[in-house]
Image (tube, rainbow, N blue to C red; front, side, top):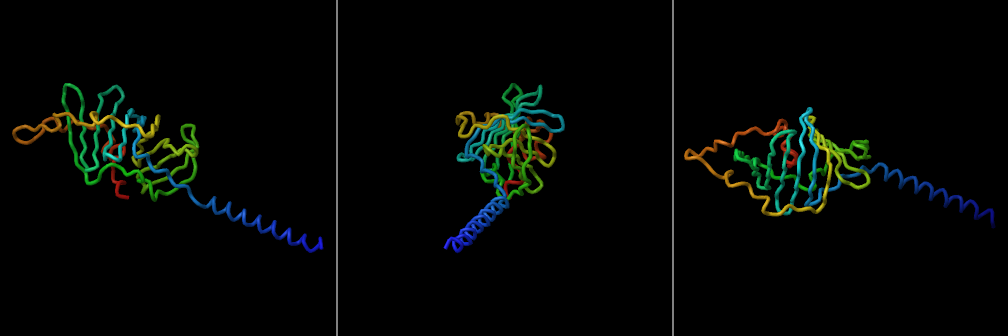
Length: 218
């Protein structure tokens, strides 16, 4: 009787072992997907574009259809980039120059799931973090911490790098701070705005700003 049950027991163990191998193989072959962005967050970004350095104070507010980048160039002036989901952007300075430039693009701010469909490239160590890495349409390379799922870095095709210094999920900027200054809406008698053509930081338009760009529709 014992000799009959022994082959059965061995067969069961063999089947369990093969099933475990199959599950492990299936798990390994399934690429991870990037976490959707929180609908509201605040982040400090350190930007490097060919040695041109910036600190960007970023507020993302998807429920209200708006995104705000407060940009500090190294030893330069503050630039405010206020973006709305209807495609309108205001670039302005809050100083005596009263500089303001408006722009309108066909797309709004990035959706929380804008990384859907990105190509998984594997894992890399960056800035001391083990990250999953994805590439989206040869436009951006996105690095996400394996453990916390927080973004660590993204790199644009132009070489412009964004390093995530802080990432506060759920942080919201008060509504009063989302209002562009009145001089952004003022026009001269001929309908032109004489202060509308001040320079935007190098590389900013090329990469579609920090969060807005051609990848919106992909």
